[in-house]
Image 1 (cartoon, helix red, strand yellow):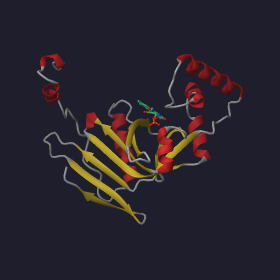
Image 2: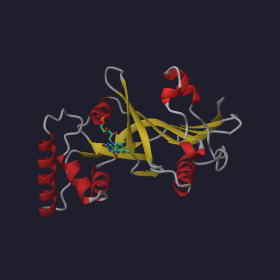
Image 3: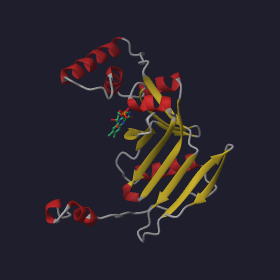
Image 4: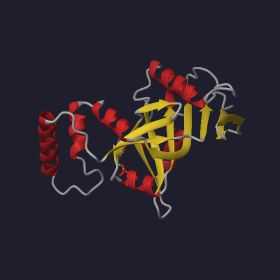
Length: 223
Ligand SMILES: Cc1cc2nc3c(=O)[nH]c(=O)nc-3n(C[C@H](O)[C@H](O)[C@H](O)COP(=O)(O)O)c2cc1C
């Protein structure tokens, strides 16, 4: 156990004392001719089988119309050659930001393996079928919460939330095929995917794949 904050003169000294890079690198970077979607899935699989909790949780960054960046943690819902999919209510701040400016970044960090992946590109609605499938793949309670959602609006009274979820649960029992109009899947069609691999000796490795005219090429970067 590390000494607590109270053992240090100030927060800066305490932050410097915190250990970094207790890592077990499971391998090196994907080869330069790798397909970045498949290479990502291979790293995700290594994270999942390596016991990293919630390896499919990443940070979605968007930019508001006034230029303010916003980042929030989301669950990855799918990944294939078309892109990386995340879901949520279309009316939410992230949904509105993506309507106004469809550029997004999705970032994953698998700490115990010293790995980061940064994905950037346009994020577009993946269509009605994708939203329907995604919604029905949610658990019953997660469907009710999503149906009742007024995500990111001020919540004046917790009862309002509880009652709205209970009403949505009843509605879904009566009409289990329902999918709320506001449910959205955004697919990030990456034009850049960067893999970062920590090295216990600090010789970290970076390789960025970029897409031009449908073909991917790789470039190594200074760490
Ligand atoms: C582990 C975790 C997973 C989450 N997954 C989702 C998700 O899949 N979809 C979603 O809309 N919000 C998810 N959230 C909540 C978001 O972080 C965020 O609070 C919410 O989407 C509102 O963001 P916005 O106001 O920028 O639109 C998750 C939060 C955490 C901590």
